[in-house]
View 1 (tube, rainbow, N blue to C red):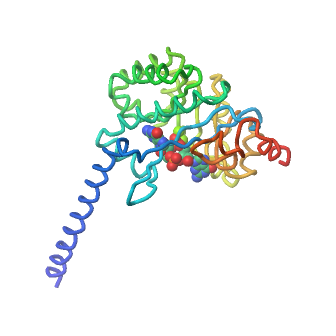
View 2: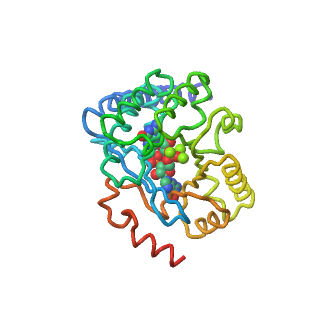
View 3: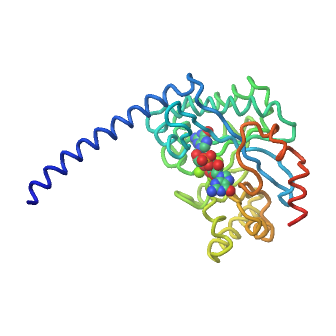
Amino acid sequence: RAKNNGKGNAAFFDQEMDELAQERRALEHDLRHAIARGELYVVYQPLVATAFASVIGYEALLRWNHPERGEIAPDDFIPVAEEIGAIVPIGEWVLREACRAAASWPKNVSVAVNVSTIQFQVPNLPAVVRDALSQSGLEAHRLELEITETAFLRNRHSALKALHEIRALGVRIAMDDFGTGYSSLSNLKAFPFDKIKIDKSFVASISDDEAARSIVRAIIGLGRSFNMPIVAEGVETQEQRQMLLDEGCPQAQGYYFGRPAADPFQAEEWSLGSPHLDKRDAEA
Ligand code: C2E
Ligand code: MG
Ligand code: MG
Ligand code: MG
């Protein structure tokens, strides 16, 4: 009995594996052609500072509008793009696109671009950044790159070297998703980050989890002593916003302040010095 069942399952399993492999190959193929086919676009989410009342910048977030599958989330396609190396041209495209967009924004508004660990394994990243700046005319101090700590896992020495070269251009470097994954204080010691972004998982539980709140408080304290601004990611509620203000968190980002939008300066609601944002703050 068991034998028969096993056989049937194996055949079914094979077929399922075939389908998965085929689907995966199709996704890889489509991903390699997504730029040329104009399927990728960038949306921008506001970053607020000064008692969370003013917008000082926007984070560029990649979107893929697939002709058959519709919108595919970055968490579903960026890991694939990293595995097949497609993240290198895609990341370069995002960087150029974000710099070009930001060059038309008010001068006191900056742009943050996520850079994959894989992009650090290609030796020309500093040159790519320099070219994106010069082609767009964006001043270096208005660009910020967000990296996660996996960048340090492989080729630590060359990753640090690239970071120093990029920083020498005047570009700021932020550590993203701090507190998760491979977080290590030695990375903070090895490289002078300009900013730390507290992972949204801590912010999500800040109001009902004392441990999460203690961690957030400790990271804010760390930022103060390193003279590094701290950003709380994923702020969704007024309660979270108030707790972060009470803890002295200098910067924040999240749906509460604004969702990512293709043209943030068209979406009147969140334009700079927005009365809406001020009003919401006054009501709080
Ligand atoms: P991330 O860099 O940590 O970006 C923050 C993510 O949190 C974004 O998800 C954003 O839309 C989402 N978010 C913002 N506010 C809130 C909130 O209040 N609540 C919740 N639940 N989520 C919020 P998204 O756009 O889906 O991107 C996911 C991740 O994909 C990013 O995380 C980043 O690691 C990666 N990614 C996005 N664009 C790029 C890119 O151009 N290059 C690379 N290498 N990675 C990218
Ligand atoms: Mg980010
Ligand atoms: Mg993050
Ligand atoms: Mg992330």
